[in-house]
Image (cartoon, rainbow, N blue to C red; front, side, top):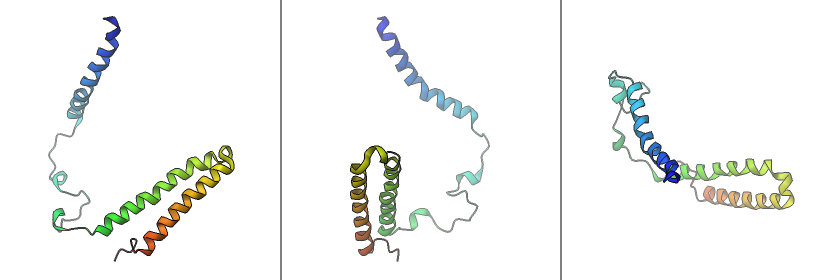
Length: 118
């Protein structure tokens, strides 16, 4: 039975942690009601319309996805640049292939008009 004590302790901590965290947050929260906090935006600008009244174009989401895709390439470029000496020619060729695929995708999206906002 003594072998299960660490497991039971872990389960007890896992169950108690959310409750303790919520209790501490409840004790430390601001108690005053502020009508500004209930508004949709805290920027100080008056609300001109409801959020659900305006529909966004599909191009908005398409540009957002393309931004994420082409932005992620920089995440892969940094570790490659750090390890380039160890990777030698193989790593260089792999990155050239990776960047070529990304550039082909970028040119395709550009020619299809996916980056045109209007």
